[in-house]
Amino acid sequence: MATQFTVRFDGGELVNGVPCFEPGQAVSGSVVVQPDRSMECRSLTVRLIWFTEGRGNPASDQVAETSITQGRLVPEMVVEGAFQFQLPQQPWSYSGRLVSVIWAIEVNVDVPMAADLTHRERFLLRPRAAR
Amino acid sequence: MPRDMSKVAGGGCILLFGLFFSTVSVFVVSVMWAVGAPWFFLLFTLPFLAVGFGMVGIGVWNLFLYRLLIARAFGPPSIELSASQVRLGDQLQVRFQQASRRDQEIGKVAIQLVFRESATYRRGRNTRTSETSTVIDQYETSGQQLARGELLTETCTLRVPRSGMHSFNTPDNALSWLVRITVQIPGTPDLDEETVVNVLPSVAADGGG
Image (cartoon, rainbow over all chains, first blue to last red; front, side):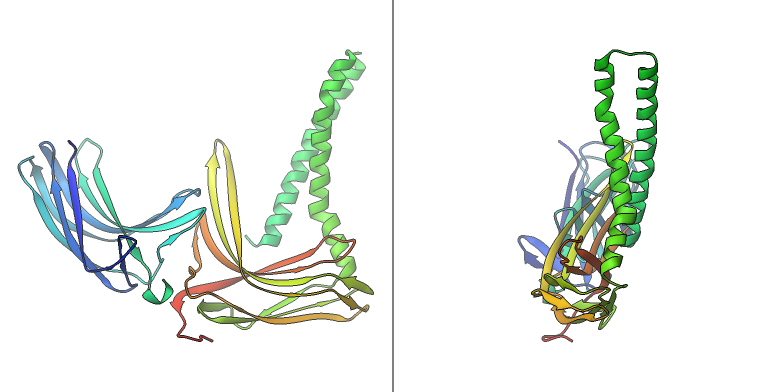
């Protein structure tokens, strides 16, 4: 069993099952991390990011970040935290043939001397008037 | 890079590489000929010569011949937009003018609003760019007769859809809006001009400007 990540959004209109937020709106929610083994955690952070997908070399940007905890994580322990970020005006979410722009909340566990554990939960950033 | 510059750069690269490739191929054929190599060795080099000369031909066409033929038919184009940046849902007025340098009959004139996705990626040691363009709105006229010195003038209104995507640009990914104008000229390559429109991440109110 792998480390379990759960991200819940507060609000957001569902578009094809994905929460959709307006540019400039606040996006908030909670994260739950359930480790599958004991590990040292330099930091458990939640980030607001966008990145591109498609044929081109990827581009990405981290817009904001909040730290949830640090220290030792053990399997019996469930780590919970809340996040709230102000969304920028752009770029809007887009899905095309060659280029897609994806918004996500990224949960990152920084483990010393090992690969980070990362989970991304996608959402849409697009004004209602343009849907 | 503007499309015109990218055509020049592409044509220049093809021409230089073609010249190098042709020179090497001709040198190899000359050496084979001089040492009396069997005929099938010479036959083997023919495709290389053809590729080299073909690249030179494409480079010369892109860099010189195409421009020369267009310049014989028309003067420099003028494309005026009502705004250099618009919102989604806005209308865009386009005015295109170009002086005819000879008496001539032209075919269809098309003014199109185009949305283009461009993606640059590495494959092995090469960097490549893929593009896909979608015509979102367009205006067309049928053929007409132009006298020498007469101005070809077309005006139209194009609309950026409210449900579109704003302009977006990273070093290797781009979502661009363009006004593309093509003029069919019998016996000459089509005139093809483009100008970029910046579409802002904003939606016009109903019936936008």
